[in-house]
Image (cartoon, rainbow, N blue to C red):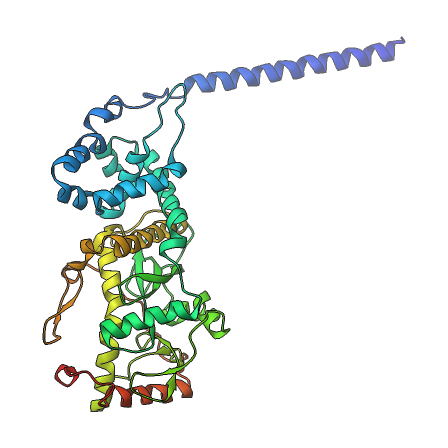
Length: 426
């Protein structure tokens, strides 16, 4: 090896030494930085560990279940039997395994926390002090349980008809209860308040002056939700959301299996089946709405009364939904995707109650006395969800729909289509 090669080898050796010394210094600095970090004060707080003794689920709810079922029902807003049914159905999806260092949270406690949140809209911190579960854990529990409820129940209790016989069953129910023939459901939408999403700007800002997503629904004669559209930005109007909805597009393409036209009772002219809505929507032969309020004739006022009487089911459905699950009235701090899941769970729970425990809701509904005067339901006494903005113009009614409405007006004022009390209601 000559002198030049020897000098090069020494330089490379010195460079390696410098590199290793720098790496060692960096490692030492990282280790010192980690030691300087604030040490965690608790793995979990001691008072949280006393949950089996003092927690609301383990102590308070057990006492109410044994001694006061009405208080239990008021606490979680579902019947004790319904709570047990829900627990049985969702446990496979929300049950967690114990580990060597921590015991998992009981599925019953997970469900109780979620139902209490849906019933009150309380913050996760407030729920933490009652149930003795950390607020960041509750954050995951609520979404997980709501997803489980939707997954287990939505196909059974939130099923939109697609066959003519299914639609006819709804129409027969409307005719029997509300004396409005060929009605497939009542359509409307409401705002659900939310916190402004990150980088959301004014996308969710509505005309009422707050941020929201929209719950639009089709409701049958028994106040059950048959179709829902959840998550549209609050700045949209009824008509904008409806025009972009999957249900409207499916109806226009003939994919929903609507029944063929048949005559009204006591009549001979075939009339199609239709949805009823307010004047925010463009009228079609399959969507009827009231006459404009200006300059109404006597017959038109009768038609509007009959249609509005039937459409009251959707107002009541939204009213008892929000009265039961008051999280829909509070400003929800979750991201819009999580709010979508929570609202879907509320709708599923509402339908379960209408199908299996209707007595828990009937006292909240509007009633009619023997003269068919409306007795306002208890849901009207409190705060309710806001209506959507009505868009004027650009949502035109078709000629055929106008002609059909005129024919219906004459029918509802005729001896075969009228009801005895309608003249006293206008």
